[in-house]
Length: 223
Image (cartoon, rainbow, N blue to C red; front, side, top):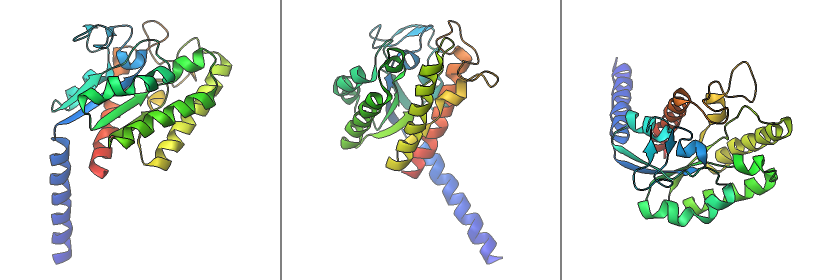
């Protein structure tokens, strides 16, 4: 009986701790390209200052904050940016907000333009390292599919996505498989739904936001 009471007490304390962490105000900066910005339905505050333009539901950041109104998720995505541009802009795009966490979803434009996987890997390593050097936690996300992707680019994307997962696990980063969240379950490498063939629809952005929120909850609790 005493053992059961002890277990129940430990579970209650764990639930209270998780709730306290979940309710804590956290500043999060989202770095990336069009799928971070919210294209095609939304232009991010980085693209259309100061508050962005369009339908705010067409960005995954909106859905994270629906789950956690106490979190401030700052959308600094810019349509067309490659990983090397995000790397160069890290200090100016992330650091002014003094975030506890950065979300990194980047690299698809590199592959689309024929850049080698190894180059993207090096850029992502540097982005992750710059955040960690500033004591900023990192959520590493896999690249998203798009409907006119070529077989060669899809092969490169899968190599890169596997590497992101491995590297995140090796370095203790948060990891979210955003590729799988929006992929068509019956057509590999295609989006389940898209208004333009290149980007998720609002439902897709909602799914991404909820998946990243799940990752953040677990990651913030464990770190």
